[in-house]
Length: 164
Image 1: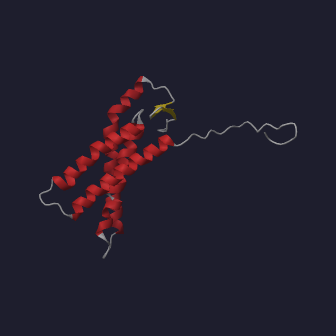
Image 2: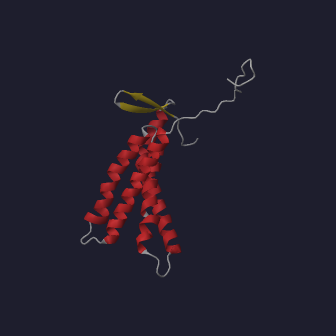
Image 3: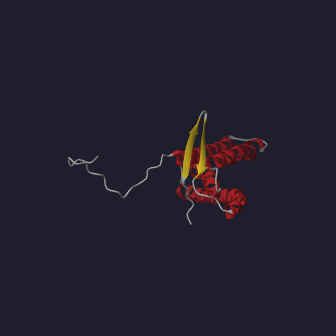
């Protein structure tokens, strides 16, 4: 069973509603409690992978400012993407709420919770924040993408011989 869903977008006066086109069973409700643990697990795994990759690539003279690009930015994206994909519905709303909860938490941990935060602390918080916003944008893009349905019916031919 894949994690992809089909969505339908309905535009009304002044707002756009997004709803899943498939019916959800009672088991889908069990996915909601897994949103935060799965999102954090993805964040933690990608952060570790980013740290390992950065440590492997880093050599003498390697710019330290690239560290958030390898560790914090991808892990912020992963947190939002995995959390929204685990949610059985309301992917965009879930991604926005995850970002709203995650970004202040990261600023508290990296900057405001430190006795004397430095540039590194600000870069870590910024990397996580930008990663979260990129994750929300990717979910929004996935949900809002217009549907293209493939058909197997050959085009009809008019009496003159040209396709209609």
